[in-house]
Amino acid sequence: MARAIQLAERGRLTTDPNPRVGCVLVRDGVIVGEGWHRRAGEPHAERFALVTAGDRARGATAYVTLEPCCHHGRTPPCTDGLIEAGVARVVCAMVDPNPLVAGQGIAQLRAAGIATETGVREAEARALNPGFVKRMAQGRPYVRCKLAASLDGRTAMASGESQWISSEAARRDVHRLRARSSAILTGIGTVLADDPSLNVRLDASELEGMGSADEIRQPLRVVADSFWRMPTTARMLGLPGETLVAGVEHLPERIAALEAAGAQVVVCPQHLGRVDLTALMETLAKRAVNEVLLETGPTLAGAAVSAGLVDEIILYLAPHLMGESAQGLFDLPWVEAMADRVALDIQDVRRVGPDLRIRVRPCLG
Image (tube, helix red, strand yellow):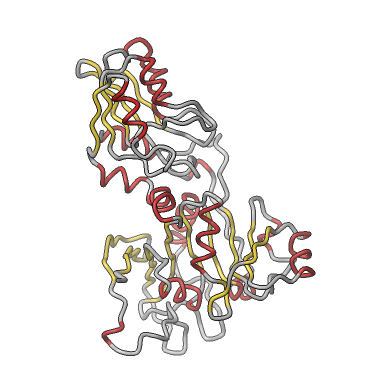
């Protein structure tokens, strides 16, 4: 199963919106076939492994990081392929949270006389697909909030100047985060101040798991723009990939202008006069968005944390000081006493160039 998990990782940047899955076929203690899911619409991991194994798949054990699918989508059911190949045993790291599968694949294999087992290295398998698992289980994507700050916790000067707080090495690391994300979310304040591109600006050869011939998938760019202030000349609207603008009022003229400029639009419910972020996340999940990277200022970042939407915070901490007049990381007006603090669980700390990258998870009850 460890090898199957390694294989699944190879699809980290390409499988979206499908889950990352790896499969290894073992017969008489020898690997006879292996494969991983590369991208949506192409064969699943089990199908690749069966092709490489050929007749040696008969009587083999299949180790799969996710329960084999049993429904017809863009590709045929993997359960049918395993049964037809004469596999004797299937070991799944985890049950598929997709309601179209959700144990039915295992039941179909058992009905065909194939021995099955689940729960082997399940935590590692879940870590492969946090967004897919959350979208299927909760109807919302997995949200990472990316921030860069000085050592004294400042993200921009009082004037709004913020380029560049972090190092070139940290910025390249952010592009790798973007490459694995389904969507990048920012606020209209960031767009008006910085006119960002919010795209992946690395060559395929610079991204682990991609060859130079692979095309980089640009994540969906999402702008929370409650009152439709998005400029039709915004840089991101002229770049490859899609841009979605979310507002709260139906203003036909502004919406038509944005659509003519190449944007997609969605009218969301409002919360406290602004885009309801929970509703926006549910809308993105319906668009098969698994993982969202939040790149924004303290207002939207604080609102997302306050709404309990942020699963992970990734902070690039640069070795310099910016002083008390500079902007902070999060606007959390409801935090007035020590008892109101947002507890954080540190997951990982490592050096990226001269900066520190700290990965934490909010411990919101």
